[in-house]
Length: 616
Image 1 (cartoon, one colour):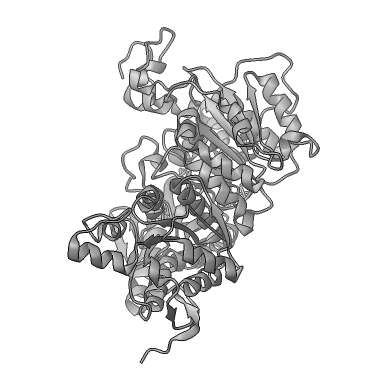
Image 2 (cartoon, rainbow, N blue to C red):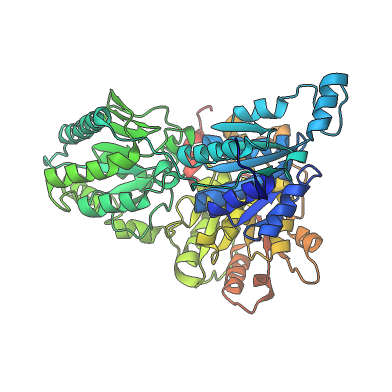
C-alpha cells in the first residue's frame, strides 16, 4: 500500500525535486491550471519564478540556463502555452539540452465532461492526448500525470531520463492534482550512465586502436604524426571539458572546436588553433585544419551543415566520436561513450608518442614549410600567436568615422573584450550573420552560447535571460548579437531583462531592415557587386527604430537605455562608455542599433558569393 505523506503534495514534490537538481529559477507564463504549483513553489522558497512575456522566451531562457547549469525548466499552461513552448523544446532536443517542460492541464472533472459529453473548456482539444503526443516527438520521456500515488514515480522517471540522456522531458499535470497528497521524495535523482561492460571495453579498445592506426597511416612529409582534434558540442553537454583539457595537456595535440563548442575550453589554451566551420572558417584556420593536419579527430563534434560550413561530408581521414559511437575512416564502433573514449585515447596517445609528444604549432610549421619550399606567403601567420593577434584590431579609437561592417564590428568587439573591459561577459549569438561574425571572438571558457543546429531566429534574446541567471555565469554580463529580423521575433524578452535589472548589451545588427542570410542562401548573387540587383521582396522587413524600444520597457526603478551607432567613431565611443561603471548605460539593459549597409556580409560567407562573370 502506498504511504502518502500528509505534508507532501504533487506540487511540493515536483518543487523539491527541481530544487534538488540545483535549479534556482523557473521560467514561464502562468495560467489558472499552473497557479497551485507556483504557489507551492514560492512557499518552498528555493526556486524563483521568472515570468516572461512569451512561452517561447521562457523556453529560450531555460535552454540557455541548462547549457550553463546542466539542467533547466520552464512551466506553461495547457495547449496555448505548451504549443508556444514547443519550438524551444524542439531546439533543446536536437541540441541535447536537458530541459524540463511542465505543462499544467485542465482538471480531471473537465476531462470527464469532455469524454462523456464532448464539452470543451478553455484550451482543450477534442484530441485528449494532443499535447502529450506532440511532446513525445521532442523529448526522451513524456508523462501525463493523473494519479497522485503514481506522480512521484513518473516525475522521478522523467527527471532521471533528462539527466541521463541530456535532452528534454515533459510533465503534464492536471490542475486538481497539484494539491493532492503523495509520497515524499526518497532517494536522490541521479543520471543512470551506461555501464562499461566486457563487450563495451572490447569495442572501446578497438576504437582507440583504430584511431591510432589512422594517425600512423597519415603522417606528414617528415614522417611525424600530424593529427588535429575537433572538439564538439558533446564535450560541453556531457560536462567533459576537464577530460578534454587533460587529453590536450597530456598529449600536446593541437585542437580546434566546432562553432557550437566554442569556448568549451579557455581559448587562451596554447594548443587552441581556432574554430573550424568548413568553408566559413577563418582562412588561416581552414588551411591548418584541412591542408596542414593530416587527419582530423572529432571528439563530441556533430557533422551538421553549420559545423561543416558548406561541406557535405567528412572524409576517410576523419574520426567522428559522437552520438554514442565512433566512426574511424570507413569503420564504425557502436556503443562507445565519449566519457570513456577521452581518457582511453589520452592514455594510448601518451603511450605511443610520450607525454607532450604531439605538441606542435601548426601555424609555425606550415609557415616554415612554405618559406622553405615556396617562398614566404605574406598573408599567412608566422605562428599561432601571430594568427590570434591578427584577429584583434589596434586599441586606438578611429580617427575618422567610417561606415560599419560586420567584420569591423566584431573585430572591434574582440579587442574590447580582450584588452579594454574589466568585466566578465557571456556572448550570446543568434543565428545567421551574427553567429558567423562572432565565431572568431577570443573568449574564456564558458563565455559563448549559440544555437547552432536548430537555428531558431531570435533565440539569443530570451537565452540571455537564462545565461545571466545561471549560477555559474551570474557575475557575467550578457552581450547579445542578433539580426534585426530575428530581433523582431523576440524583442518582448527585453522586458524580462529590464524587470530583472540585467545589465545586458543587445547589439541589433540592422542591415537596412533585411533578411540578409535568407538572401544569401537563396540568391547569393545579390551580394556580387558592383551592380547589385533588388533583393527578393519576401526578405524585406518593415523598418524599426530598435533602440527606442528601451523607452517602452523602462520604468522608474527599472532603467533601460537605447543608442544607435552608425560609424566606427560612435562604436568606439559606446565601448568606452561600457567601461565606466558610473555611466547610466550600465545601469540596466542596453539596446544598441548597429546600422550596417544592406549589401554587407561577414567575410566568412564569401565562399557562397559568385565571382564576377560566374552564376550562382
